[in-house]
Length: 266
Image (cartoon, rainbow, N blue to C red; front, top):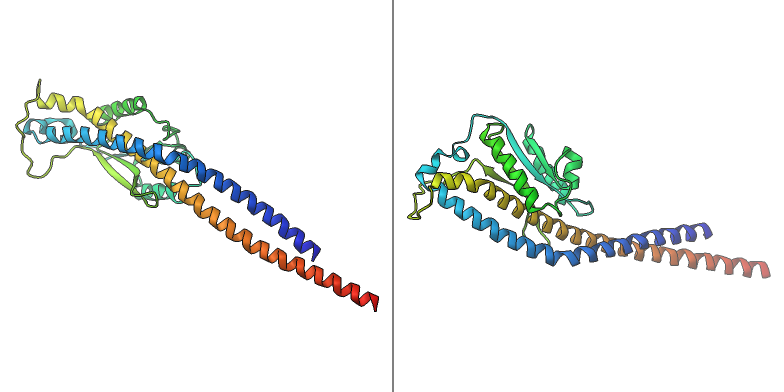
């Protein structure tokens, strides 16, 4: 019995350490959620604004001559994969990689430590990915697209639905498409629509990319918060069960000792 109670005490202590760790990580995630969602919402607004401008331009007939709309003859696909910098976020990273497996043969550009570990190269931090990083990458993507090095550009990211729900998805960025039946609007562009569109596309891609990265990071923080909350509840439940088992073992040991003492006195 002594060995049983000692082993149970060791297990309780081990699980209790895990419980303290999950609580600490949960608190850190909770402290980051508000800031992450605020940044996400601002990025969404900027992304929506640049998308509206490009939508206006692609509705102009002259812009159909743009290489970003006409596309090219390449059969290659390039996909940016946005994952987290750390684990312990439930299925956040796994869902992103599961979606990426559906596009075998694509060239992947990873953003985030976990994505870089899987695909190699890329940008090692999604949390610290800056506007300057985005501008540099967008210029490179536009140059390669115009040169025909790939014909489709997509971004695998995570959509923030709520603090409890996040969904991996792919957004197709290039080539640009005009809405079916769209017509030129009465807006006057200087010097002309085609020139402005070609100049605006890198900024458009950067805006879309930054928005998706910020949304993915908010999703990662929320997923980690929920994962740590669940892990904490499981650890507490395990401690309660082990404590009950420990009390029973200890009571059994005491009862046995009393029985032996009584038997020895007769």
